[in-house]
Amino acid sequence: MHEISLMRVILETVEQEMAKCNASALNRLTLRIGTLTAVEPDAMRFAFDAAIEKTPMEGATLDIMASALSGRCRDCGTEFPLVEFDSPCPICSGVDIKRLTGTELDIVSIDVD
Image (cartoon, rainbow, N blue to C red; front, side, top):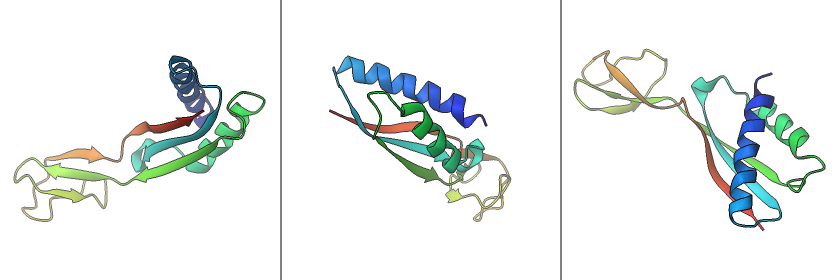
């Protein structure tokens, strides 16, 4: 379960940000997870709950925003949701597609006291 190691790194970043603003408690952490990351939201929630136990973060809430796969056709510039990883452009049928979303694992917000 790689989610545990991912959550450790995320929480290290959260701790650093809390220290910068002298925060004593984490209330809410919001993450954006792309569909292509192979990160399971339920496993991330489990890892979060286990990692914050008996820490100043205990009692915090984890919100996860799913990020669907989308792309931009390099031929015509159309942006569109990708049904499959290699979906062609729905306008010009081009196959040179730049992926825009769906691969991210981002901290969106940290709510602290």
